[in-house]
Image (cartoon, rainbow over all chains, first blue to last red):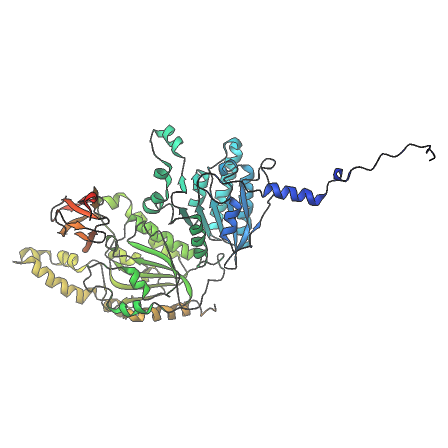
Length: 505
Length: 75
């Protein structure tokens, strides 16, 4: 074999030296999407949570490769998907990365999703599981958290925002939910606090557990910081989907319409005799609502906080509506500071997203006294009046038994702009209840009477018939009409069709 | 010991429970009068009534204990 008189070329480089972009991407994806075992009571990863919330297979992650440090990820899984076919943006804290602490990069990723939701008009769900601002990032973390808050506030006038609390959420991870519309907490798993037990102990010496400072029992019963307590993450996702089913995707978006469903026939049959004639006897307002509203899905918010007023989403004639109702079964159905704040917040939300507000009134009044005045009941009650006046969506009000004084005005009265309002035939509307009224009006006669209680009852009966009956209000045109209980649903349905211009489903 | 407490500032209008009574969730222990409403105070636990802590006509504040129930002696 002849010897070649020239240098032999080096063998071609091995194929693996040239990067195969497909396998590089595959490796990148494998490492980025590797399942990091959740810590603590958590069962699901941030991405699994986002995927569970939305319709199966619909989740698309935004900027999945974004990283704060190589391979670590941004600390958040953000993207979009659908619930019941409607688009929704999802932000899911990744507690596997630095306990979900919000650093500069994570904050940018969250803000990107917020901006997208605001600009495109989609509801946004924040799945919170974060210890708060990332301490290493210093001012950059604070600035990022502040940016999230600012967008939370901008979003308020544009899109519904829902926060889920699935782990211990401190600082910024607790504040952002407070700037959103509805907060749902998983029992014995989610907490919200300014700072956790260790910092509390160091700051003030108080010895308290995470549940004591920020558990779901505290926030859904006492503080009112959160609006629903559920048993599991799955329940939190179900509740979120149910909540979204009542809401438009954005301000000015189409109201959700379903096929009309008749009210529960048993409740309809019971309605005419449901409310006790004697105005001092309590009853369950839920049973009254059952006889009027569509017999379908409902979602009561804040069921255990200020239970003397009910706030729930429901449907009537297929229209999604907000329902506000006094609950005589709890504290006699009075309005106090907490009930006023709860009610005002609900009405304000409905107004912001053009949901009709149905108000069912049986209220003995605002609770007076040192405790309530000290809590600022005047200021808080005023918020309810403002919420009704500011709300331009259809407002329908029915007085089902009694409505006295300032509470009459506050409960969606004609003066506050109710578009249609009725009173049941047995109802009483007056400045105060008959007993109190005659005690003031006939003070001298009662003082001189031989049997003052007998005289008082006689005078009260006269007052009830001559002053408090709803016919005076109807004759004055302040109440549109006096109706029977069984006529309520049809009246409301007709009014809603008229007020929504008979808008198609 | 479980304490059934007033849920609202009110006066004690009726006391339905007697010391030694067996009670269970939903049983009316007392009726409180506030804002011209008759507000029942119902038991939320099983047990027997060990003490009545108020008198008829007494003014009670929100959170005041009304009836003490011994849960250990429950049925």
